[in-house]
Image 1 (cartoon, rainbow, N blue to C red):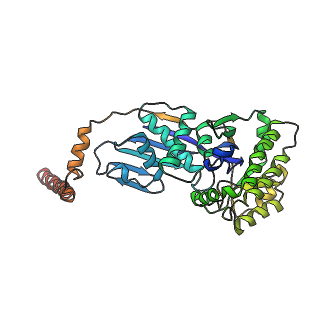
Image 2: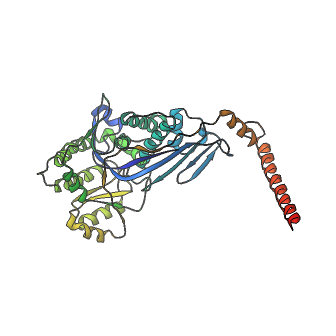
Image 3: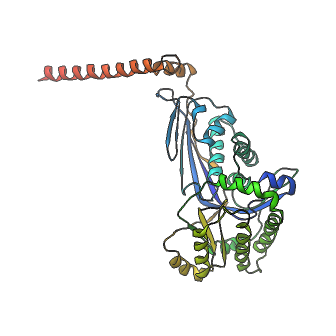
Length: 381
């Protein structure tokens, strides 16, 4: 049994410059942090005594006869990438819902890859784990995703992530006093807008528009430098960070028309009217979580103004994806899987008939056992 814990993330500045179509030509950077909200992956080799070959449990349950038939794209892609054909059982639970702008999809991929490596009794460092997750999502699955979420999930912490056009991705921990990060944390409030979205669809449009948004993306890249300087300088008013969030959001919402809508704009304006200095919608846009920068003395007023929305408490987290349970199990002989296939009709051309015979045998066994119990009670009486 393997269990991994992988953190979700909040991205402050630079989102959009982490798409390969941009940074492979211009370079890019992101300022982001992981938080104490996580996704958990439980993984084990499935004993070959069940009617199905593999079982995947998330918002739905899949029982499949072959790993290639798994519908969940990340599970299917990770198993394909690592060449795992054996029966597998995977369960996923998370602290917060998916498709809400916190990097849940990539956290799932990172956590699953780490679990599968552990299942194979192999270790994977943070750099390799992030690179594998990016490869699975971008190349194996062909998804329209950037590269920041996988890196944040693998490394953890408050980082500046540099995407170089001709080199590896560079992760630099932001160097500042702990009380400075604590001060920033006290000024942040996270609200769920009440609806989710499919990030890849919004990302496809943003990628398509990238060649026409060179000026905007260069400005967003520069904001990473300015925001890092604010956090690193203890004498700079922390309120400047909030004002920059507001500028960044106004810039980001011009990238495509799908990033925001009237409902999101209404929530944002309500937050500003209650005293927030700035904020942004997290992730690709279209819905999910809204992050506000609000002075602590205005926090209650913001809560009252947005009382119809869920406010999610959180703290920054330094730890990336890691294994919390590692208990290697017995590896079953492959001949058992062949026998299971024969019993359940998975390895011959008349599977339905074999399965019907197996179930009929189970039913007959149950009837005979019932008759035997009745005879025993008659003798006893």
